[in-house]
Amino acid sequence: MSPITTPRALAICMAAAIAAPAAGRAETVAEFYKGKDIKMLIGQPVGGGYDTYARFFARHLSHFMPGAPNVIVQNMPGAGGVVMTNTLVAAQPRDGTVIGAAAGSVSTAALFGASGARYDARELGWIGSLNSEVGLVVSYKTAPVQKLADIYTTEFIVGGSGATDGNVIFPRSMNQVLGTKFKVIPGYGGTANVVLAMERGEIHGTGSWHYSSISVARPTWLEDGTINVLTQLSLKRHPKVPNTPTVIELAKTDEQRAILELIFAQQDMGRPVYGPPGMPADRKAALRKAFDDFVKDPKVQAEAIAIKIEINNPMSGAEIDKQIARLHAMSPDVVRKAGDAIKAP
Image 1 (spheres, one colour):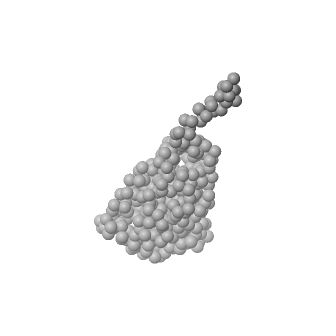
Image 2: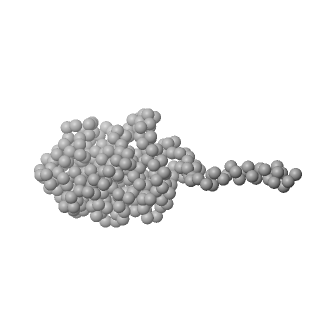
């Protein structure tokens, strides 16, 4: 028998023939992710609303991803997600194994010239936003500020998280544009700590607390009079708070309205998930599809209702791309004034 026709030689040839097509084609998304971990970096502290949403998504992501990779979570708080986003851009792999979740403010921080924002939001790999958010300006029941008119006449001491968090930049912006009298005390690290400070009487309230977070953290407070809702920080009213005006409705001039619309547009992409620039197109597409399938899944929706998480108005990654492009195309004068308002002390 010729050496080439021995059983061992035939087995080697057959194995080579099977392997040859695989060696000559690109690795599929499922093959890439199989047996790997996806790390999700969360730009806020443990225990707050952003952390709750991000962990909810992370818990289900593997089920919707080709290759069913394991998903691990790491909190990396700082500057409303800017610290984490800087790390995602500069120090993490760009192969689709590391993604981030933070506040919508990361989408405009660099546009407004926020200190430390070393990235271009147009280049990030936007995967989707879990919910469009409506922030509420609220005062505690014992605070001297009890109604909307009081924010123009009475010093309103509110707690804030980091320098670029909504509960810091939004009340300062309102001071600059509308002449309100917020006194912002930053440094609480997260909304959960701000809420505790309200209960202890350290502060009067907060300049931005998402309705969705209140419904999770303190679901009875909107009904039992523990807090007063003064205005809504959004482009349109939340259906559950229909009688409270939005900040846009407080504008007295067209210029004020344009500036406020630019500042609060980030609420539309309130809880974004995104990757670094330069992710392979097929893996980015797979992450986007997994996100879209997640937010539409009936079991996910049922669980969200059960744990009082709102996923009523998500945005796709493509929609976020369009929104960010629109914001970056706005008048330089409006962008400058909006940026000045956000950076106001």
